[in-house]
Amino acid sequence: MKYQSTRGEAPVLEFSDALLAGLAVDGGLYVPAEFPTMTVSDLRSMAEMSYSEVATRVLEPFVSPSIDANELGNMIEDSYSTFRHPDVVPVRQLPTEIGNDRYLAELYWGPTFSFKDVALQLLGRLFEYELTRRDTGVTIVGATSGDTGSAAIEACKDRTGIELIMLHPRGRVSDVQRQQMTTVKSANIHNVAIDGTFDDCQDLVKAMFSDLQFRERHKLAAVNSINWARVAAQTVYYFTTASRIAGPGQPMSFCVPTGNFGNILAGYIASRMGLPINRLIIASNHNDILTRTHSSGVMEIRDVEPSTSPAMDIQVSSNFERLLFDLSDKDSGWLVAAMNDFRSSGSMTLEKSVAARLQDLFDAGQASESEVEREIADLYLAKKEFLDPHTAVGVHVIREMKSLDGPAAVMATAHPAKFNNVVESATGVAPPQPSQIAGLMNEMERCVDLPNELSAVMDFVSAVSLS
Ligand SMILES: *Cc1c(COP(=O)(O)O)cnc(C)c1O
Image (cartoon, rainbow, N blue to C red):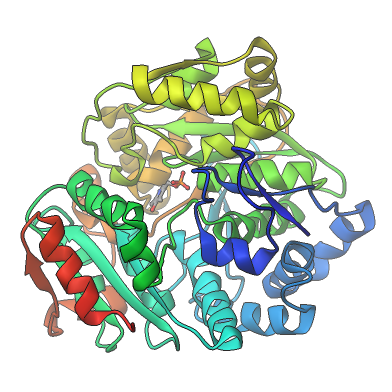
């Protein structure tokens, strides 16, 4: 398998090089040169397979020839043994008031209780494997507004060859989210609270990556959602969910609470690999750039309004570029011009054919804050079950799609206990806290405070990096 950049000007790489590179040198994102296909008998056999067996079958063609199937299988087994549910991604049915044949796929049973764990647990092991093989090390630098930080820390703690520095905006992540990061005791984990916003943190990280000398000297690496291995790892639960819900060869739909477009892009890849998918539904909160793009064919930036589903408060969905590349039949020339236009004017008009193909497979819908609250309250009243606010956006969107035929699953992206304040104010009841979250309060926290200044952050990175 070879990987090419969406912008068409970067070297073609094998899996392990694309893994370590993250962003391509031309500013594009790596995508496989072609999609492996699963045969009908592959799909049928998945109904009898464990999550890890399906993962090995689905991911093996993506990592070949960099990593052999046995090594991959071991890393996968190890990754998903950390999950707190034997099915890894269990499926349960939603009440019929929401719709017939409607399900939740619970992606949140990993170490930090968000769907980010599914990809990051494997990514941490892939990094360690490749760095050990090459006898080298990297300094992973990231910025987080919440879930990514703790999932990356859990995935990378105590791994050979990795120092991880995670920036978060001081006082602007929830207590649980902060404690999940700062109570990790491993020596290779470094939390930094920046006196600024999440955007300030992200700008600091970008500035360090654009300083090519600094980047080279400290072997900076990224585990953000543009890393292809994360998208690949997420394709797996589309296959397992379909094998649990749909009959052999029966198409089903997926409704995905969407921010950076990494999760739903994985669904698109699964469909390109031969999984029969009826509709892929983009669910947004009031920050609805993707819903508007879907209906008008024009992608236009607006200011982000904070919501109770912060992981979906986005202006630009970076993984959308991979979809545009594929829908335009890999027209890098058009894509580069369109992305430049978008950057300078804040708006991009999709080619007619691209907009039409977007509507062929995708639908889009949104939920307001009050609709999210009502959705959480309704499910509690009906079944004494809790939804986190991100998942509630998805449940609301599927409820509104009355004419959708066939089975459909909403991707449940966070455990309700992670957003207990929102859940409690909607239901009047605090969701039960798993002991791993409740126990955090009593743990010692480790974190360095730094000003929103590039030189101070660079000094810190220089001091902890391996070289
Ligand atoms: C990251 C995240 C999302 C958004 O996922 P994307 O892949 O960025 O679209 C949705 N919900 C939760 C809880 C998340 O952590």
